[in-house]
Length: 372
Image 1 (cartoon, rainbow, N blue to C red):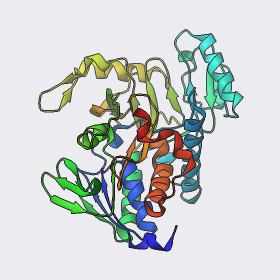
Image 2: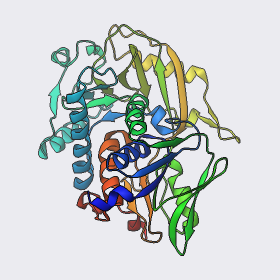
Image 3: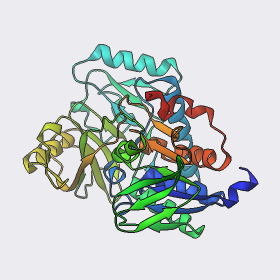
Image 4: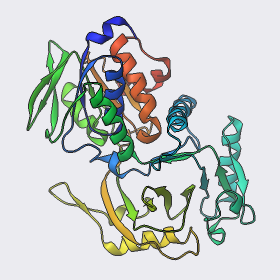
């Protein structure tokens, strides 16, 4: 990065993985950074993400390449801290519901661009993870040995410690924030509870609320964010290593010998309340944990310990929205469904663009102006 980057001041609005990662990369480069969040760090989507590190399935080549770069950054972190209980690369297993042709097509597509994709069945799944209940498998199942998972709250704690050591400032419980402008250029943010913060550049990384924050600036970002839920089990001795993505439950290991579970079949059972809260009948949670339990060990149900419900960030066209707003110079945005997989790489690339003014070619397909 250039020498002038040391003098830059930046406000980051958003306490999830994208905001924290960008703030950390900026501080490493010598910028003066203040991270401001509506409530607590990791209290939004980053606190309830399955956070499966992957580029499985079908997507555009630029998006695939960006995700692979994201996985690379996690592997670098894992190589340095290989004993972490919140970042692992033990692979993943996928199968669809009664769709052998679809699973075969997914496998062939993954192999066509060099993604590590292997077909397994009940007789061979034990070599991938002996804790997977082979009776639950489909006839055709995919194993992706190169995939992993991360607990984003733990990663955020790790990055925040480094960020603070570099002199970074964090302001929590600031309430909702809005972008301030002067002569068409962003100059800072105004928060309901903590007043105004000014800087030369700012990043809006507010998860599913990012489109709402930039809408008053005349910027349209279609928002397809659905309501989702992540359930954490009580401590279990089943010792699952892989991430499981199946027709009725997605499951990954979690620190403390617990398991993280989610899916989407129960979205219509989630009730939205006028005050912004969400609730769900606990019988639905029990059903989800029973479905998850069938996948592991002896197939007995898991017991839920806690659950979090909220919006899952997904741009309207499914692809990331990243970069400086042409209509509002000095204001950058980061809005993506794959916040976990892209967390480290996007923080790095956004910070570089902020401090050098040079647009990175890997982000060319994801600029906000594509919706104009």
